[in-house]
Image (cartoon, rainbow, N blue to C red):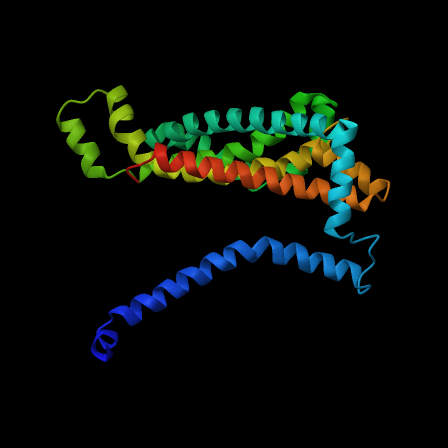
Length: 266
């Protein structure tokens, strides 16, 4: 028995199993501990419970929000803005990123402009968007598009540039036409980078959604958070934040699962 333990047999296996069990336990307890600590701190009197309501009151506010029918409307409006802006930004980012990564002329023409605009946060465009688009939905789509586009563009641009040059030369030697070069060499090689950019943009689309809905609207999760803040309805405000975090986390998890299947060779 001592020899088995010394050589890494049952003893080492037992410790590895204990570590796995501890890791699973930590994962299972993470959220309950977080919300339990939040409830205790809020009810302890250490903080102002009006400004920092406990989760039980947040849940009650969410239920009241849902029963009024406003939650479904706000949810639908926010998700629609994210979807339209995300897909428009992703499609444009991939197309232009592949072009700038592949063709030096296109890169020289567009990259300096994009590098100038890319560091400007979407929220800085809110006053301009209000002037350009008023309170229309087009302005909301534009802000989400703006946040997504540059992240996807740089990912696609770098992905195409980092495709193994040996593969490109081999395909060129075999007389592969440009459209097949794109389909069979460049895009498969760049897809892992593109999907990293797309996954990052899922989160960014929800960040920019907040700026978009603060630009002026009459429904949406961020809009409801702003109204709740003005009316000092802190429980509903916290509920809106929880909803945004939950939707963003679910979207990220779903996209991650899809990416693992789509880019199986990465």
